[in-house]
Length: 442
Ligand code: SF4
Ligand code: SF4
Image 1 (cartoon, rainbow, N blue to C red):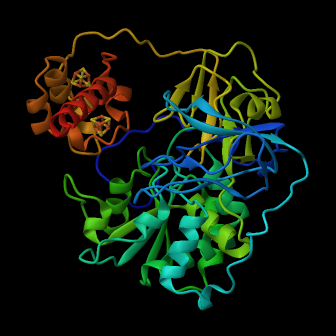
Image 2: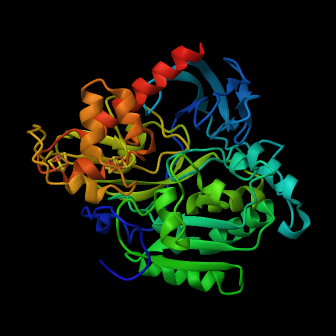
Image 3: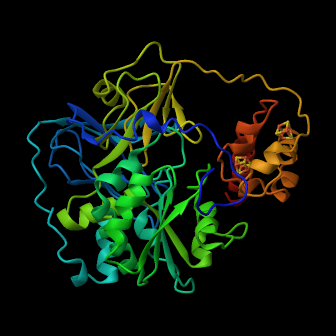
């Protein structure tokens, strides 16, 4: 499956990247209305800073939180606040949202000013600017970036890894960012290195993106502290722990984070967002997403305002191609199926994929003890046993077998010849364990 470093386990689903990987990023015209959710990230939800009928500027902060793990949110258009109300999040639950009627004036907030030369900014200033810009991980996890850049003093960071794998089928937004904006990715990488106070960065890119590898090698050439690392094509190559192993050979122990091994991982889109915000002062109010799948008429890569509704984005892609059977926010392996097209794009939305036919059989059969799920698991788990314990209500035993170390990649379900709902049972088991723990502490 190609040259380059990799990790043990994993699968090789068809990539379907050809639908969009050569298509340049197009800017979507801002829609008439955007819905900016107050929960766009892992951690505490923001509280709205505006109320109905307030006039807001593009880039104005409209939500913030005192929580240690959180990130502010900003208006992606100028206009009038139509409502502050509850709205459905792509993950299915309801959160508060600020609905803005776009006045089309593109009136910029006066607080938006460039940060100045990177060399003139110290560590703390860069971290503060990144927080104020509301930057979170754009690979999908949406973890606040400033928190990753502020490790506890006893955790000595020595290496930054920039994740350009984009191993999820169909998605090509990171690929296009690297091809079209390599200098931005490098600038952001340098800013992240400066914020961490270190001088070693790797940019990991799967070998199915040769043009991105070439562009990034050229852009990083003047910087000896940044190295591009071609990686094998394998899913989930872009999962944090698997990426750390592929690039450094280090295995992040169970229950630990890359930070515990001295490593911080950020996505290429995040690096580009850091660069954009430091250079222009504009917070994170738009992102590149891939709209793809046989169910859309015009698959493409789009620069979309945060808060644009799924229906508006699909319209820009000329709408459905036939009768849609499944609309997924994110990719087919880790994305979330949507039932309401008024759901808005959030900072962590890497794509929208539409399928017409669901070709895979979904009727589960008895396990034939083939062991394929064990071979595929990149977290070295025995999914078949964990699921057996979860299904039997023996959660303690499931935890002992590593339930909580599952990275929810879905590789086990993908390879199971008996079509067993492995990752689904595991997710359920994790939720039950969390609920039991919450009950104990309340
Ligand atoms: S058990 Fe979890 S980590 Fe292992 S393959 Fe299944 S979903 Fe992925
Ligand atoms: S892959 Fe499916 S059939 Fe094979 S051992 Fe795992 S659960 Fe059983």
